[in-house]
Length: 49
Image 1 (tube, rainbow, N blue to C red):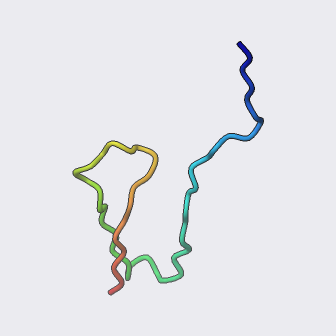
Image 2: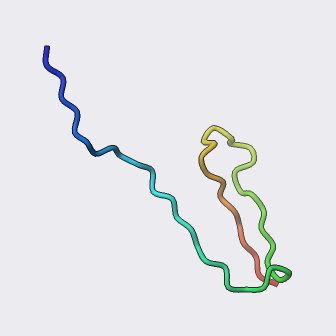
């Protein structure tokens, strides 16, 4: 039995957005509170006042 592994691993892509609006004008609420299976990421709904 021969097992071969390539040096590359599949990594999850993390996406970030730069918020340029002042913090007091931004409201963020988690979208996936009820579905907490994936602990690596939290999706936010961003609202601008």
